[in-house]
Length: 193
Image 1: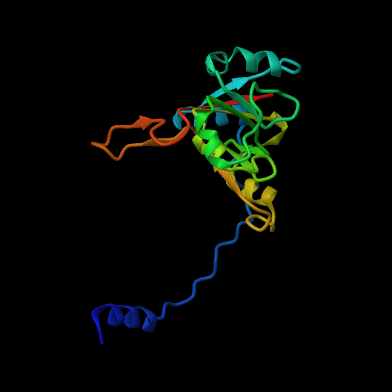
Image 2 (image 1 turned 30 degrees about the horizontal axis):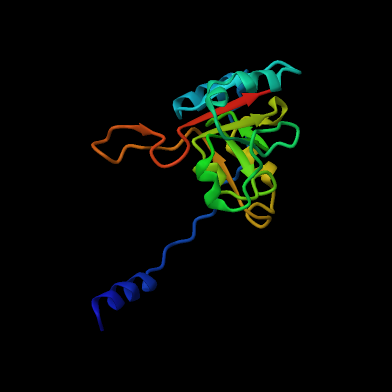
């Protein structure tokens, strides 16, 4: 018997005592100001939160430095037009300066937003654009991941693609120096309205 087969056989032969999962009922953390907590967590992940007053979403979006500098801005939000149409094929997103999407909800605990396939049918855009702008309704903010998974429900993972996004791309692989925007969006701005 080869060494690999021996190791795998030994692993299969092990039996561990089954331990019941802990109950998830109980009091979980709730924040007095979920939006402030969301903003603080997002800032720790190198993202930025922009608070938008009712009726000013278009104006605030147009004033974002990334949007003002953008030669190619694409919006996947029907009510907000970009200057280019959404690409139909994944690689075409690499030429975008800014991609605008709307999150289904946000998580105050960790500053993450949920973007599903119904919002971004071509998921490559979320990772190939230079700058990602996410619109988030304040009413769609949950306190923690337990509430987030409750909101996703039993169909999570069965209805198509979806992901939590918290901050722009970053890595610290080389000499443990943090580099933001190394292999994905260089910035993430969340506009909470």
